[in-house]
Image 1 (cartoon, rainbow, N blue to C red):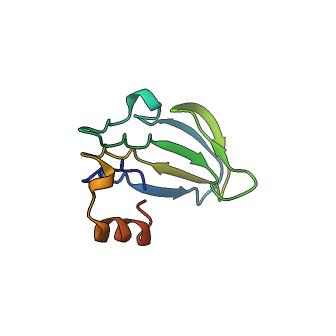
Image 2: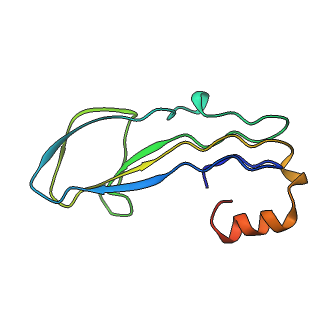
Length: 111
């Protein structure tokens, strides 16, 4: 998950895939909070959230992590653009998080 660890876990960023269904296209895009120094920070011992990412054709042999600002990138029919939003910072010492919540985070893929 993208939320920072803490007694109270940071909020999770969205994960959204977009697929180009018609002929080629040109991508111009901007994604905020992609640098490690701009992510939502943790407080009172909580960990920072993870930065946002943009990925072209995730999970394929053509996978490529994109820069936060893209201008004029050519896309082909069937290409996928994945956007993952930055996670919020956690609050409090992660070691003090309720064990039931920690287990749930792991099972649901948040940890």
